[in-house]
Amino acid sequence: MDARYDLAGRRAIVTGGAGGLGRGIAEALRDAGATVELWDAHAERLAEAATVLGVGQRQVDITDAAVVDAAAAAAFDAHRRIDILVNNAGILGEVRPIWETDPANFEAVLRVNLFGTYLVCRALIGRMRMQEARSGVGGHALRGHVVNVASIQGKEGMGLAAAYSASKAGVIALTKSAAKETARDGITVTAITPAAAETAMAKEISAERRADILSRIPMGRFVEITEVARMVLWLSSDECSFSTGGVFDLSGGRATY
Image 1: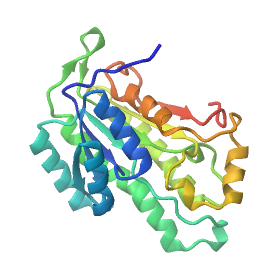
Image 2: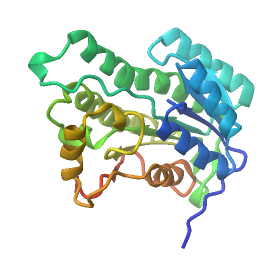
Image 3: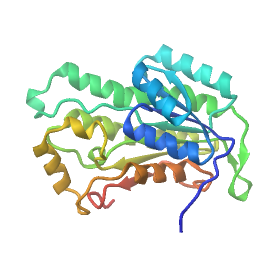
């Protein structure tokens, strides 16, 4: 059976929307009927992605608190509400043992992947709490869905990726905390932990590193972008009404918890 979700009338923001994973998620949300706005710091790639998908765009540096808050205010002014937030923006950083890492690079990875996710959550969840609720399953109020894209590396760590692993572990903890704070507000906050996908980030690594990652996945392949997007669709829909704070696996068996 092909599961389908009706997101007609919903307003969605996808950060890192110019990248392959962000575009795939945005496309799935659009096809389900949502009005989608891409956020990304890279103007040219953002414009190209928005044009191809036929969706909205907003150039946003998610590491700048003032810029994020202004973008959130503008998005709410434009759409009157935001029903879905997908925090997907992230960078890989160096592939080196921790004693060889550049502190500036380590900090940059944490700043984008964790601090940026925090800033976007801070700016948008506060506004989501104030918007009119919809009636969900059993008549319970629903105001929005937040999906944070973490990583399998945030669950188990990985050699030569201390900054990336630490940042994604932080995203998982941030998700759990935000979920507890919003559990009675009609907002679900969840995280997904995909293994590597065929995106530009995967192309940054060497063939040796790629083979190492692939060897850790029992299914013997990378996750497809469409598989990630389908998980996000459910987590963004009103079918997801009692799952909050959860971490949803997309690792091909690499993690079993």
